[in-house]
Length: 332
Image (cartoon, rainbow, N blue to C red; front, side, top):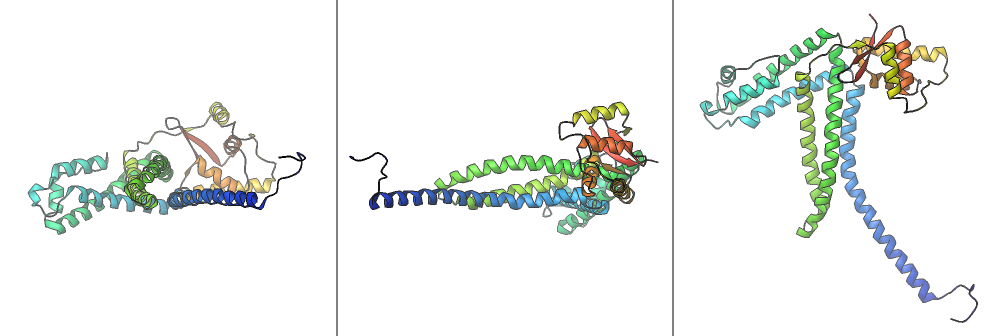
């Protein structure tokens, strides 16, 4: 076209075409974002449940955590009976040896269950016998749990409280990571089902719900089973040399120094930790104590907190060297 190069082109037809193209592009990407949000919303609802469970493991009192494990133990015994027993069959055909073997393995080192005991508990037969058997196993499970926790406490008073929380957190973190990978796979496979005239989002919700419920069941069972198989190891006081090594291993987090705070604030933080240890048991994982310090207004790097806790006359640092776990306890 003739004319100066700096004169802008103006045409109602061209402007209308550009506006229409812009609307189509925005509508296309809005649809994509809306679809992604719908898929993300499914996982976000599951994430809220898991994070609530994790907060309970960290912040609930010891009786609350203990009550959860007792309930999960009872649920596991009920599920075991439902899995292996067919109430409609004759008592002689029930898998007594297998049921006794699995139950004894579950109660590792606490109780031994014989086929004769199981058969006697289910002597009524039928559905009533299965219900009686499940009730008997629930009672035995709680008894085995008490025996195991007493054995853990015999090694270090109050250790069972820290062990419960530690095992629960380990199982939650392990299975949640696996679940995230599984949900990503389900998302991809659900989108392919549109070729089979199925709604991808509906398929994703259904499969995701099944996967989530399966994960929650595994968390419950594995937490209880891990407690039964837990073997207490001696906790060794953290020496000056070991403290230096621990601080060095976490020194890269943030500058290793607590902020300058007054003595009153430090005393308040110490009082909060000491009160928690006295009320909830004589031991607590380092992660929980670190959170208590931050809530008391005493933030800082993990290395700085380690040094401060080690210097407190009322507290002592104890380490499980095999598990590389550090606990905080009251000095006796």
